Image (cartoon, rainbow, N blue to C red):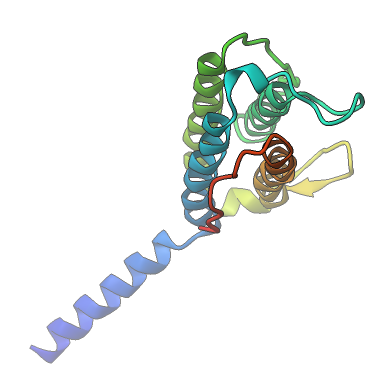
Length: 169
């Protein structure tokens, strides 16, 4: 009986460890990041989607679409191995279209990343900033969203809109 219980504990521990990989951790954070960004997108009134604090900055809409195009490019080029994948910022005219595009971008990236293996994250890939591992590209995916989301918090505050409450995980 003790051997049986020990076997179950070891099996459960192994299963739990298998679930706690950089990929599973990324996917958990990625879903939260999507929801947090969508809350920000929803908080900004549609008539403020063309707002930009200064002439050299992107509009609120353009920031969101830049986030989407970057995630499409990084996940497609480096995880789907589509060497022809280029950054392409599409035009969406309504708030609903932008929010739908953001959702699709996050969901498509998650679908692509789910096919990666922990071993694959060690692979080196050519990047404009020099050779990087796929793990570094994975980190860049989230870091880029965070960078632009921080800018969007400022846009909301400058318009007197309280940003959604931050949550880290």
